[in-house]
Each structure stands twice: as structure tokens, then as C-alpha cells.
Image (cartoon, rainbow, N blue to C red; front, side):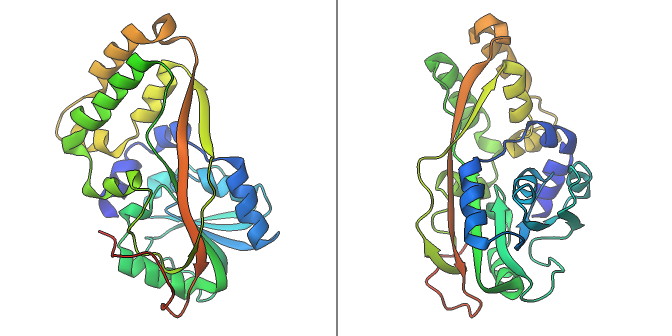
Amino acid sequence: MSEASDLFGAVATAYARHRLTYPAPFFEAFTARLGHGARVWDCGCGSGQAALDLAERGLQVIATDASAAQLAAGRPHPLIEYRLAPAEASGLESASVDGVLVAAAVHWFDAEAFNAEVRRVARPGALLAWIGYLPLQIPDARLQSTLEQFRTVVLRPWWAPECDWVEQRYAGLAFPGLEEPFLQGLWIERHWRLSDLLGHIGTWSALQRSRHQGLELLEPLEAALGRQWPGQGSTPLPLRWPFMGRWGRVDPAGDGAGGPGPMR
């Protein structure tokens, strides 16, 4: 997780501005299963995108991240307490939370240590959810092809191995509890100009890794997309990301029917 903290901490301001938020129906379902006023640990919270959605529904949120820069970019809320802590050592009291949420971060954690920490801090029957999203879908075939070429070919050497788990919908990662069917058919939807999309892409971990080696790969992409995007990038277009995740009840004893196989 230390590499991820460094990568995302370096773009904390852009991350807070351009990272995606998640579908409201998920948070409504998550909250309904816990009840008003429940205490939730948002682990790997970044700049607090998911924490705000939880707090706005009346949940008490302990939002932790290993990056001080990310936390500093978080928006304050009276029901959110931001704390600097790694996922594997939260500093939370034992049996102190009713729910645990990990938004677009679980693939970066040390699995065995994180799952042990979840079992320690969760109350009996606590709800655990890992959420994220799959690659962007855009109606224009030329734009889609250019973006896919960039993501899967140009950036291929720069994606960390852990990122493979995202496109697998976290399947195969050991789940520390009794898993249940996840919500289906939800999307993250935006109407963005080219500059908005480039701001989002600029926060990708693969780009940060390439930049550390002195490469600036976003500029050629901007030029290519600018030639293809209506209005030379000024026209908002509909963009969609399939929302995905896994959830279930934490098994404090550690002998539940969690997902197969260890996390990398």
C-alpha cells in the first residue's frame, strides 16, 4: 500500500477534484442494511469521496488513509473523522464498527493483515463492502478505441500487477466473511468535456508510475482525442463506467465461507 499512497498522494488535489463518486442506490442499500447512526470504517478513503456519501446518509464515518496529502484534500463533514493510518493497522478499537467500506482500494492492501484487521474491528454481523468500477464505456467508437489503446497498450508496462484484480471484479480475493450477491445493473455516469476526462485519467496510478520515470504519456493522448472529440473537446459527452463490487457479513471467527484464494 505504500506505493499506492505515494502515487495518489502526489496528485491529491487532482484526485479530490476528478476521481469518480459512486451510485446513490449503492449507498442507500448499504445504509439500509446498517441503520441510521451506524459507525462505519471507510478504509483507504483517499480524499473522502465515499465517506461523504456515507455521512450524508447519517452514518458516523471513521475515514482512514495512509496518505496525509490525500486526507488533507478531504472535505470536512461533522460525521466524518479523518485519520492517518494504513489499512492493516487502523488504530480502531476492537469490535467498534458496524460496517466496513473499501472504495477502489482493496487490491492495494496486504490481504492477510487487512482481513485480520477487519475481523478485529468489526462487530458481530458487520457489513463489509468492496466497491469499484470497470473501464470507461463511451458511445463514440473512435474515442473508445483510442482510449482502450492507451489504457491497454501504451500504459500496459506501467500498471501494477494488483490492478488486474479490478477488471476481475475482485474475484478470487479472499473475502473475510459470508459473501452475498452484490447489487447488479448500476453505472457511474457523467457528462464530461475532454478536459474533465483528462483530469480523471491524470490521476491513474499507471500514469504516476510512468511520470516517475520521466515520461509524460498524457500529452499525446490529449492531442489524439482532441482531433476526434466533438468541438475539439469542448462538447460534453455521456460517459459510463460499470459499477461493481462484493459484499457480505464479516465473520469475526475467521472460518466463514469467504472467496477463494489469497490476495496478491
